[in-house]
Image (tube, rainbow, N blue to C red; front, top):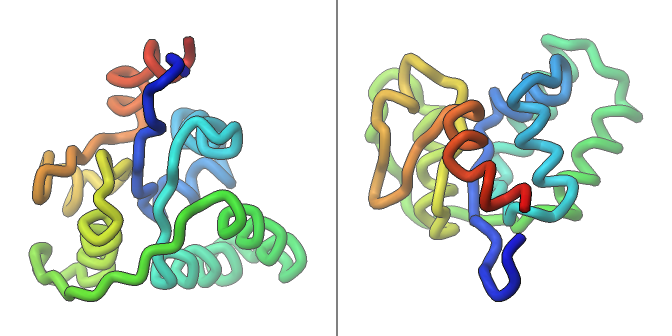
Length: 145
């Protein structure tokens, strides 16, 4: 990272965490940047509980593994407790919780794989919304110097 520049503040959507943890690929590369402390990641209690629920129920992760991953994410991220409720995305309330976290935490980017609800917004409240692939392509040279 170039000296003197600040880390990018991002919200990683739950679907990117899930994909990166289970399937690697571009979402995995985003998580690698997070683990290497090259990104400042904002999480909310909602994101953590949704992540826990999906890893346990859909992917049948064992308790110990879920706890280990959640502890790592919690230790390396900044917890944000949104004060304002948003209802920008109709019919998909969980996605509004992602936007709330980004707005409250003053994120630079939201990284999401949600092509149906979040990505079509392209930006919200001055926060760019990118897929993992687009985020890596856009920021790659700066982040990986």
